[in-house]
Length: 333
Image 1 (cartoon, rainbow, N blue to C red):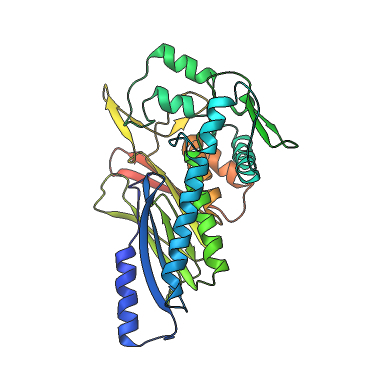
Image 2: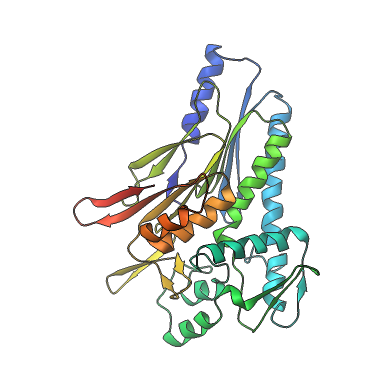
């Protein structure tokens, strides 16, 4: 999902500097921007607060929380709790802490609600298609058939009493990459609220962003959605105030073979990358929901997504679809 969302943090920062210099607005608010690499992407926070000395420390603590979640939920780190589950859960139930267990319960609920369009058991498919630590490749038919047999939430056995996770057969793997960044963002928002930060824009690599309250003298945080074909252009601008935007698109990881473009966004039900959608933008109340729903809507397509959205609250979606004349067309609900 990286590269689809362009966040004008520099523009916001310049506007803030101008506001302070001009002496307009409440003088007790201070501004701080910072970024850190985590979960293989750039996390950025643009924050306003009343305590000039404390604000940088609060932002740093928020980044530490992102790093903590990465150590818990990454399937790229061999020593993470999730990696331990993936190694051992086919042999015996693996006990995990409450946070990880409840998060996996929540993720599997999105699988049920989306009729399998979002599924955290896609790990074998990501490996078969070369998107795990790679840019993608056409899979061997035999390898793909094996991977498909290991995908589906029915392979995951959750024991609420003991907080254990087990797999019903070897080869099953969990991949939280489609939802963990959104959870990171929500955890950062919680910390910033608890620490009395006045307003902030939190970005997880540009794929999920939350606007906490509004910056000084503005209605909200303006976020530019990049054109799905021409990265130099803006396709859409959305304004966030206590709301999240998440983007799923084909530009983060993709490859071409035999005249076809294949992206990293898998349809867990078919075992193949989704075709016919350029990007999906979801506006909703939380980063976690947006991160799961943008992938689910991408897989479902517009019509089936509209039906799904009828069961959701406070959710909007924009679909960017290929158009032979104009390059792309946009649908919104």
